[in-house]
Length: 363
Image 1 (cartoon, rainbow, N blue to C red):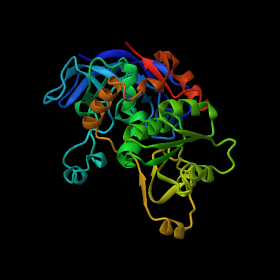
Image 2 (image 1 turned 135 degrees about the vertical axis):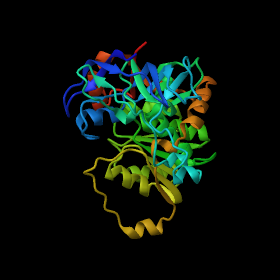
Image 3 (image 1 turned 180 degrees about the horizontal axis):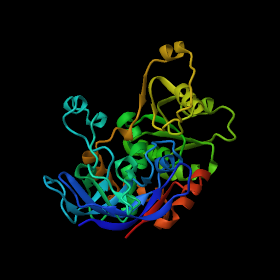
Image 4 (image 1 turned 90 degrees about the vertical axis):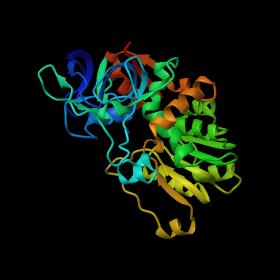
């Protein structure tokens, strides 16, 4: 029987979000309903709210979530009611060319639920990244559910659903950081901070954290940075990174800010033959002009990281276990725990750079 639950909805571009009752149908074949325990407030949700991503309003926001499976539809075998799961927006198909070639992180046909959730008027809701988890219950494709250890704090685990996974994977998967490497991370919000933590986890010996907001640098140190650079006062970020890395530049540079300026900093701060990773999503209006000869002379690898090149079934349980072992301090990313009615205020704190992550608690 369909459920009516409270949720956070963006009714139109740029409008403040509202709490509304929504209708969640019973799961159909291949689907699951999940009682949401916690959901992080991510920049992607703000992009949906502002109309930067998508135009199919109204949107049910929230996608960085942990919950408990309530019901499953026909044909679902890998999860069952009672499982604690992290929701993911990359449920790979296993059939497309990247999947068949052993690169499921580039899947071209990921899954979402077939049925829409609706307002009580019957108007269909677009679900942010195919999830929509600022709701007490949500409907997803069952393959979007990744079971994890039930003892983990839901407010911590949920962050692996998007931002923290993106940053960790940018370092460990896309960037391929190895023991002894030097790494520079430009932009130390939630994603960049996770890239710092990922570099430390991978064994980097020098990790340079760069940000224009000096408030973020102490946390970057706690996450593993060996050096910090306040880009609001440093006249030449590239020269400073090169100085810290013995004049060579970093083996891996990661742009977690996503602007033409930070792209150039990451490019020129990278050692010859090293790897440069763009993990932040640039604005669609941004343009980049670079001397083509420089890209030739400096050699190396230039990559874009989508979702940290993660495979949820592989990476989420592993990272939860590392956290529970005390080897990955995911709790440092949780700045505040809030309620459903506090999401709009959390967006404003995010705009000001006051938080790494606000997490909505629903249980």
